[in-house]
Image (spheres, rainbow, N blue to C red):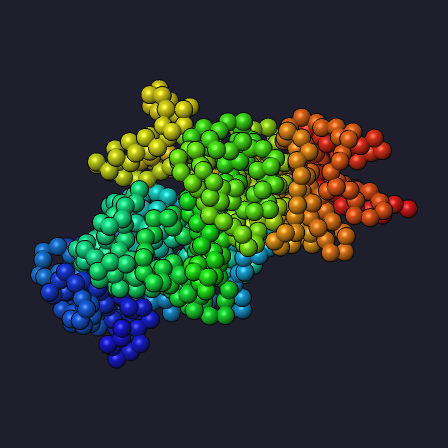
Length: 630
């Protein structure tokens, strides 16, 4: 739709068309009349200018006004005494309950014109929450940490949601102003500076977007139209979004435009789509496919990445659209995480019930991605997952920490603190050398001991509802179910809960062995062609003991690699009828890398293969390469 004498870039919102002149457009089919309310001062009691917008048909209202970047404004519907922020506001300086602000994206001067974007293969993802990543909790402060992430080997930052939300802190999944970068983290240009700085260091930035629901407070969309939502579906967090019902066309356009907006105006390198199982759409073209297509077109020659969270593990999300898929690139692999936690801790409560942490699970995850691809899943009492046949290993994002899983411990405890140092080093080696796409959670690379808790700054009845809901969720874990334990859990709305979750960068100096472990493994993954290769069928594995397994990375020229992972006691293989242990030619295996190195806090290297067989050290990972015998 374009009824205007100039070419709007997006169908709704405020767009500066010339110095001191802005065009406004809003979709409000519930209204007969819309007035633009321009505020001449940030004081809400200051003089206001009312200007009627013209009805454009199909529920749209638009018009031009004398207003420059920085102008505060709201909308009045049908001469009401109440004024409301723009549903497509580009910035909410005082939060989602207050006035919107005109932003001119052309004021920023980018320096990333030669940035090619990001392909999925070869990337190391780093999940980051802006508010807790630094003590300041701003994009400017986070940008100062980018060189250190680059030195570690991080290549893609996955930024947790930033759409503005009420309150002074939150995870971001309760966003209500989807076009407005959260004012708590800085200005829109501060966000642009962060992305520009990341690109200058060779780091891409993808944005976690929530397209399955809106937050419970500060959402004024129903004032403009009830058709943003539908009661035909249910989500765990609020009203489902109407992507396929009556009057869903403008709703679809709203979200498609939102994706384009982040790509065009902020140069993001793609998205992580939250809880895609709650994005309901029976249209001929699923909204995720439509968003992906539009976002890639907006990126032009830049390559961008789409990652999806999908609890039921539906692989159609990453199938090509020509095959009935949605054309995304990768899926979070919860199966791998759950097996890793069981192996590290020896415990499998609640949704860990269907995992043993056994060697075969890790081998299967390396070879096939998801562990559950349609089998019965006892915890949910139904089948789980779909076939991953034909998908490359890079299509699965592997992790042993993320924001949800750390917080779901109840105390926000980091995985490293729940297991032995040796076992943790071994699982870290598997995470960073296996052919999936690895992801770290903020602070993991230096062994952060600060917790990451669930926090949401809610007031009134919502505060108690959020706390009660969180406690009910955690009751599925027997260790967190008693009244005594629940009384001691952190209050999500408590400011201290948020403050305790901030990283302490002094721990980089306190844990040099953890820093070295991550840096060396990422470097090995990048510099060794066998570990860098992400090809389907390139890796095989075998179980060697109750807690021990081997992975073999095949090379067309015979320069194979072995990765030994032992999560249990030392294992002596006097009899080794396993062909994966055989060298590729005349010769033997030599240690290439070992988690036992003193540099990582280990006791020292050992020779694995001797004339009498194999001796695999306890709780260790060792990479080997072949050498030709003289």
